[in-house]
Image (tube, rainbow, N blue to C red; front, side):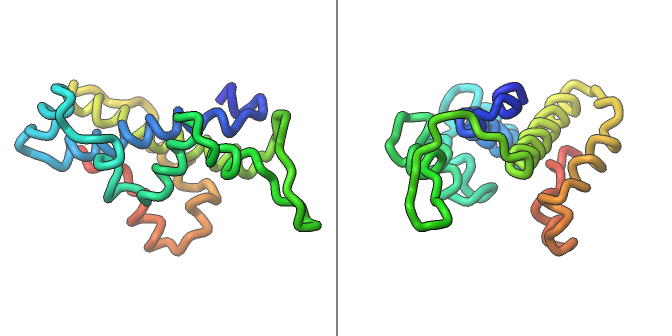
Length: 162
């Protein structure tokens, strides 16, 4: 939140990539009743990050998030090059505040963090206080509220930890 609030949204992408991987791996653990995936993950044998994300997020999105994490020139092209109305392109050399993008980014972080916290809490027999209020706040954000209700429910349903 602090990095986004200061206008350095592009710098959050490495964190988003890591959280996306953790979220996907947590879903893999929940989906595997045998516990084998969890054992492999704990032994660093669960496969590459891109493999864990495959099926939970578009492959090209995860790859795009990898660019700033690896000092790849495409990070500049994807996140710092700004297309201007006259057709020219310029580089963004300073922080930029875009509330609509920042709020959507924060909602994605909150949603994935919520899911991972619920997996951990369930594993330890704990409950997360005020979880229904958090779920309502996340699901009411326009990032998901503008979608067809059927699509939103299918795509953004919290991890199944029962």
